[in-house]
Image 1 (tube, helix red, strand yellow):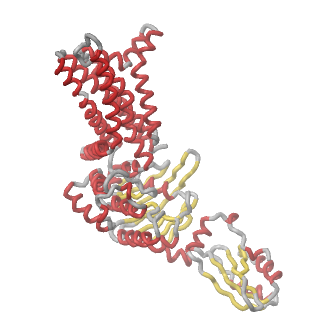
Image 2 (tube, each protein chain N blue to C red; image 1 turned 45 degrees about the vertical axis):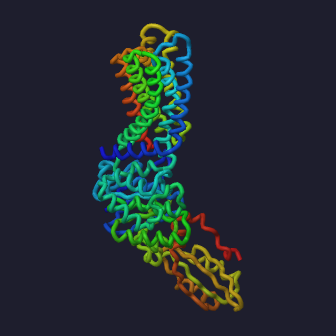
Image 3 (cartoon, chains in turn yellow, orange; image 1 turned 180 degrees about the horizontal axis):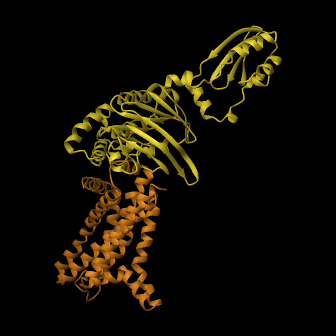
Length: 322
Length: 237
């Protein structure tokens, strides 16, 4: 339903996104995850045909977004990050205008506005001037204009940003329901949100895709990124340098324990390597007692950080120096 | 076509339902009214609309950019342009639709000045020909001024900047004939041909010259075309 083919976009000399390739199947909810400035919004703007890619292209419902822009745009419902709305229009007038410019007939519109207003729970505010609405309600108006013409593809850029927690929950549920009928692509910098809503996640950083997987896989294997918890009885001063020597160990964080004559460490290891064997052997060979050795799964949040923060920028764990 | 109508209708409704357009219109009517009174209060005043139309077209230079400034600038500032242009709408439909709405607004304001004409007919016995030609000139000049305002509005997200740029362009077109006396030959003729004021005085004298009509319509076409282009290139910036 959505095919991004080698999308590259430069703003002047600055590469906003480079060589993006992905596709979204009919009925799938794709999450686009990345820190601020990663190129999420740029990608959304390109997919919806607002700005042209510097090279590459995208196909929406089979139509090329550059060559057949008008046809492609007929199949898109879009909610930009800033939720731009005409401040001095009433909700119902606004929706009917947005419907008209998407080629809906007035009888279609009449019926559909009722449905959409109900779905987004805007009934009481139908005749309210948009400028007077709170952020959460504006967001709902934004979503209702996006789904108004029953597009095949929905593109939502940061749909839960800046609204209060209760409304966030509601909005997520609404999006999830929408995903049953539409092909949906949504961007976010909030991990739990993406893992809650999406079938598949693309992690984007500095304009490039760094990982693609479904949210549950991201937590386990994608990673190969692992941390190991280890408890050792022995002198801390000696343990840390020795364990650091092991090939594949990236960093060691000392976790304070109350009582007990042992030390607990969280060891971060290279992607895709299981070092438990090496660690155990080294501890035993050094004459210390190994009390515990356990692989720690990584939360999506951590994977996200690991994948998107440059290695040199990784904060050094406090236990390392001790 | 339905897109065009939808856009025109939305903008027209916005004009007629918000106070700013009424304020601008009232200002215009007060100013033209004052100068109309001065004009007809002179001894042996002519029963005609010449003075009125001259002043009206002078004030349109400042009025038209105020009418058009928000049309595209506001869309850019609010970001609503993004939703508009990701809908299946062509740029020319956006520009033309908004332009037509502004033309409706201007015609509504100008039509109130017909009250002064009614006064002249009531108290005097004017020649009807020049009245008609003067109003044709006013409408054409207004249409051209709005097209220039449209370009101003497409250039910036800031309404003030939009209005100032459009007013500057309009002032140049209005008064460029004053420069023609400094040069001579073909250059002077060319400069005179560009000037709006030289042509407007013909209209208010009762002369309908086809070349003048073509001139104003060309200004409309050229500036609307430039506005459409300007909107298209926004995507590429």
